[in-house]
Length: 178
Image (cartoon, rainbow, N blue to C red; front, side, top):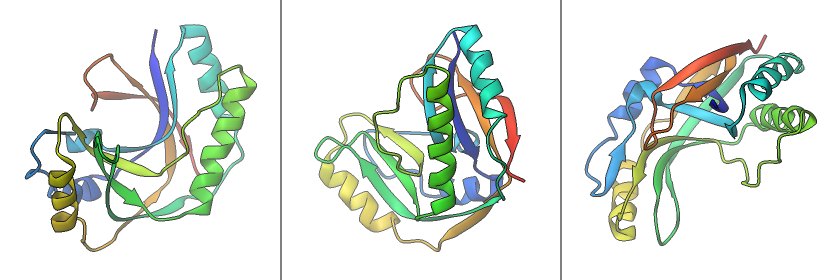
């Protein structure tokens, strides 16, 4: 059974800039820069027939212009029990429209709706037993950097193997945004 999700690749130069933010946070398991991505829709573990349906229906989406995306800071998920540190992407209506379209298409073929609110981000580290104070200190010292802007010319269908998060990810299909 493949584990699938859709996402946008992070260009190497942006990944390099983000990788410079690594370190200095006890309890962090840092994601390798080659595995940085922006998840659009987590699909999960599905059978091969459904995987073929997913790949096919994503090809039926409305054509869109390439997206200009901006990373403008750091944040964390988990509040008092932090579980991840991420690079935050500033508001982009076209990105939200693309994600909503994928949600609609995937529900048409019988996938359950995504229950989590879409928060555009690039996970930098997964946290285990990290202190909320350490996370707040990390965000305060590393969270202010020049905005990183890039253009996404496509989105991809990724697969991953069962592992302890962070890749490696394989591109199963690519869909141009032009």
